[in-house]
Length: 298
Image (tube, rainbow, N blue to C red; front, top):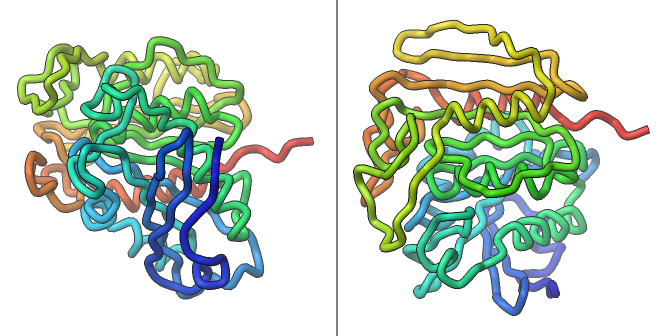
């Protein structure tokens, strides 16, 4: 059951940051929406959903990724949902399969929340139904993988950063493009998978490897299994193309990189320095998203 809440539609359409809410499964869920000044509703715009990491919140994700600035420059809407927790605005988590915290303990259906949120925003704004995308870091990156599985009818592409694909069952109805970023020295979500070396959740968790996620999506999207490979300094890039319905899969491995959003700002409590690699994940992600809308349905 979904009930819509928050400020009135006319108010929300003004430029800037807007806090909103809706009720999903009896819980009041909140979000922060950024509307660029250039938006006037005259033509459809893309929507990017940015998921904070475990222990973070919407404002933290906005600050860390810089996606609002990118939206202002490139012309798309960006929404930062909040996870759930014992406190209303801090130490929030997502239920991404085997992680994390409050959301996992209380079996929160975050996929239902994001589906309802996308539906709400599509009613209030002129959003291109073929250009809805999801990205996130850490616990948010894990949920991005999960949403690729469960919301493939809505989401054209996902961009997990420093996250693992830990869902037990993934049966997307439609192909989904994927671009992932992961530091090879990430101690929170290990590149090779396994038990985290740094851990803040009381629930034990064993992560799948980055290769596991790439192998799954390359097979699911029926891509050419021979990737194009290139190196840019400390970044190794693998790209799989010739996939179903114009989708593609890419992996950016940051050599020596830790648990961070490349080119962003470090999370206050447990993020690593993001400078290694010399790339902007935000700029690369938007470029990838912009090139991978869903194909037009006949």
